[in-house]
Structures are given as C-alpha cells and as structure tokens.
Image (tube, rainbow, N blue to C red; front, side, top):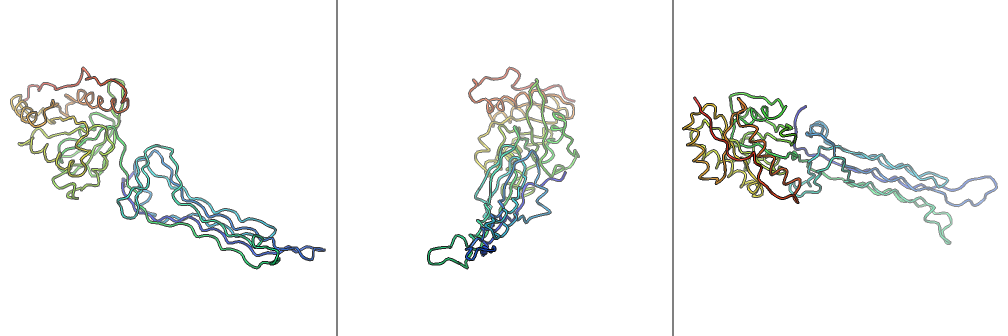
Length: 350
C-alpha cells in the first residue's frame, strides 16, 4: 500500500430540494386548496475514523459531493432526503481549513464520526403560504444550498515511540531487529522515504514504534525530506534518538537533530528521550567509551550501546522506551525506574 500523509480535497453537502406548487384536485371537491409538499433535505458530509495509516484514497479523487434533496410533490408529499456521504480517514488525521494552519478536527480515536458539512434545508411547499386572504398561493421556496469548502487532510501517525536520527544511522535496521516490520535496508542515505510502523513486544508488553525518515540540517524549513515527517513524532510519548557510532563527531550528529526538533516545535524537545549509539559492533572498546563519554557530557543521561545488526543491546533499549510509555498510559501510577533500564556497558569490539 502506498503512503500519503497529506491531501487537499473539495467538499460540498447536498442542496435542499425545492418545494412544490400543487392543488388538490378531486371529484366533488371544488375548492381543494394547496397541497404542495416540502423539498427534501440535502445530504450531509460525514467523517469517520478507521484503522488505517495512509490517505492514498484521496490522491486520485479530490471532489466529494453529497446527494441533493428531492423536490416536494402534491398531496403534501415531502421529497426524500439526499444521500449523505461518509469519508473514511485514518486514525491520527487532522482536518484543516484552506489556510493550512487552522485545525478544524483532530481525530485520534477509531470509530469517531463527525458531521463536517450539513445539507441544505428543503424548500417549503405552497401549503405553507395559505392564508385567509390568499387561499390559492402560487408560491414555493427553493431549497437552501449546501455548504462547500476546500480542506486539507494531514495525517500524523499515532505511535508510542518515535525513532529519529540522521540518514544512514541504522534506524530501519533497528526497526527490523525489534519488530516484525520489513523496511527497505541499504547502505546509502534516505533509504527510507516514508514513515514505517512496527509493533514491539518486550517482557510481555507491546507498543508501536515509528521509524521517521532521516532528518538533516534545515529539515524544519523543508530541506531534504522536509518537515512533513516531523509531524509524525508529535503524538509519540518518547523519542529514541539513534546515532551512528562509526561517524567521527557523534556530538554534532546529536545536536543537529535536537536543533531541528526544537526549531519545528518546542514540545518535541521536551518529550522524554532515549539515546542510543548504534553500530558499536564495529567499534573497539576504547572508541565506544570515548564516544559515550563525549555524549554524556552534553546530555547528562545514560547512553545505550547497541547494534541493530547483531541485536546486542536492543532489548535493553526497548525496556527503557517502555518506561515513559507506561507512565503516559497510566499517569496516576507512581513513577519508578525500571531495574532493566540504564546504561549498558560497551562490549569488546574488534
């Protein structure tokens, strides 16, 4: 299934049906009077949240219109209502006005249903205009027009943990090692072009991990893959910052990503963070210690050493990620440090 996280669509609810001008005509009834029925109500535009993770259906169709109400008929018959139209969107979708900034709806629960645009009222038939001075009114209302507007659909994936880092840091390898997801893995930057989701199982517990495509300097301004994918980590309870241990300046790599997160949204920088130094199977013990020490001076928290290829240290990282996730799910529970979390000692490298 192809991935699409943003789409612009046009919506129009149904117009109300016109009222009817009609008079009762029966044998032996000389002055039957008006009996024109009302027009039917136009159909509504509804939004329903389903358990999906792409907006690809809205790439090939951008215009959606509900059915118009039917006209009224004689014998006081009201026209039938127009058919309402229900649009199905993935959980985590935001609906924004045409300015692309103002949020109309933020849909975070599967099964949510909202009326986005209401159909127009049906017109009144001539029976409503009968009076003592006008016994045979030849007047009926046209139906009220439906509402119409352009809106933006923006998907922000709902995941418990977000995996961030520079291109080629080994994020896809880590996702593959910790979940059953099968992302594309290759030895070149920007192998991952769309966010990937995987379900982590650790110590009989589970949570959803999102792999965000590699960020680079200036991502918050749209450089590289841009800020489109930064929005997918906004809903995460914890960030896992993965750093390539084989590069020379690991501190610079860490600060580059932190700057982009802070520039995009300060709330991202305030989220709990777990930091991992990846590809440490390719480092000697001395090199690993030096790079961990350099990072610890900056971040003032334990650094996890791991290898997505060999699986070394992966379980410890997953346990550390689950702690803030559990706290977010049960905010009333007392905060405690899991005995399995903390800094893992580097192993003897080559």
